[in-house]
Amino acid sequence: MPVRPTLIVKLTVATSVILIGFMGLLDYVNIRYFRRVMVEYAVSNAVQMAEVITQSTYDAMMKNDKANLYQMISRIARSNSIEHIRLIDLNGNVVYAGGGAETAGSAALACTFCHTRFSGSLDGPSLNRSRLYRTKEGMEVMGFTKAIYNRPDCSAAACHFHKRGDPVLGVLDISISLENLQRKSREYRIQFGVMTCLLLVLIGVLITFLTSRLVDEPIQRLVGHSAEVAAGNLDARVPVTSNDELGELSEAVNSMTESLGQARDELNEWAGTLERKVEERSREIAQMEAHLYRSEKLASLGNLVAGIAHEINNPLTGILLYASILNRDSRLDPALKPDMERVISETRRCADIVKQLLEFSREAVPRKELVSLNALLDKVAALFEQLPEFCDVAITRRYDGSLPEVYTDPGQIQQVFVNLFVNAGHAMPGGGSLTVGTALSDDGGYACARIADTGCGIPAEQLNSIFDPFYTTKSEGTGLGLSISYGIVENNGGRIEVESSVGKGSTFTVMLPVGGEE
Image 1 (tube, one colour):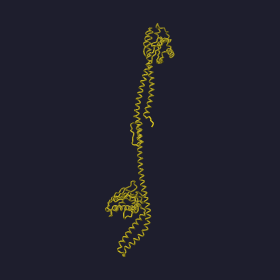
Image 2 (cartoon, helix red, strand yellow):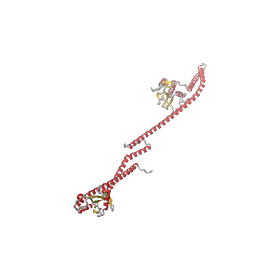
Image 3 (spheres, helix red, strand yellow):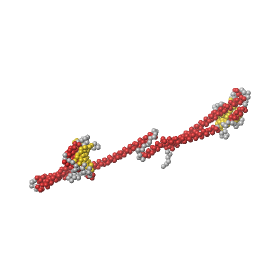
Image 4 (cartoon, one colour):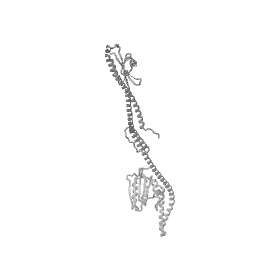
């Protein structure tokens, strides 16, 4: 993985480069300004020195005392900062030179400089009367010239040999060494450079620290948060430590992470809901397939049973008729009378079976009307409470008083309830508890009647077969009661379901549509 500079390194380097350039420019301007000030200061000293020498010159000329004048100039010229002091006459000859200056007659350079620069005028501004040049030894020197004018009191003196009309008597030329200035400038430059370096280091440290605290640390937190989110931790949050743009960015990232978490939760919820819906739909499809299979099976079996019932109904009627006649005939041997009564009883039993088969195959069209399921169920419960077989059975009613009416055939549904009560009584031969209740389905489309007993229950492997024709667990049953009930409920647009546990009892639920005509 290639090494890349971090953001704090980039910011520090960029800021340092800018500061170095700015401080370099400031150093250049400051040194130039310092040199200019120092030159002006040197010129100011030269002006003052020239005024003193000029005034001394006037006094000496009035007294005609050149010795004291030259001695005073010589003492001044011995100063460390003075390169030389010269008195030059109008012809360009050096009248006097102090401080190791050129001898008389060798000042043409100075005179040429003065006359050509000022065109005969030596009384310009101080800076204009100064010049910078280097000696043969390479030393930088500032030269300053000042004119010595012909005053009226001077021209009237007896010793004066100049003409009254000459405006200038001579020129005072002072050369001041700038070595001290150069040394001060170097010292100042070194000091300024050291201060600049210290300032750059201090500013760099402060910028690095502030950038690390204010920029790098929030960005590192954002990078770490992004890594956690990429790893799937959508509960992570970035601490918001400032109110600036990075703080707003942290709040935006937290809001985005929260939205992603909500979207993930919604997707998970949708996935779970979809799985539940698929399972529910699969169960509904399985139930529909079972119902369809059972309906087709019942329809096919009904057609077969109808044909068989019609074929055996007439012979049975004849057998029952002749057996009844023989049983009443006086010629019948009394010893055979019990056998004949047994024939009549079994024949009637066969006739009842044929009758049930015909009812099973007939599938009479229901005559629907709006009825109260509570009243219909209560009517059947009251009927069975009077039967001796139910004397040891406690019937409990739990009706929903706000249950809407159902649109169904009351006679057929009553037959269904009778069959379920009879089966419940057979499941509790020693007595028990029978709970009868009504309620509205969760979707509000069906009124549910629940008949729950505390009998022996039905094994789980038999639950899928109890509605099949001729399937029974009783020795004397025909196995048609629940099949007929199943067909009646379906013809009335409803469903019948069963829940059972061996040793705990069974619960049959009849669901009928509520409301007006379909």
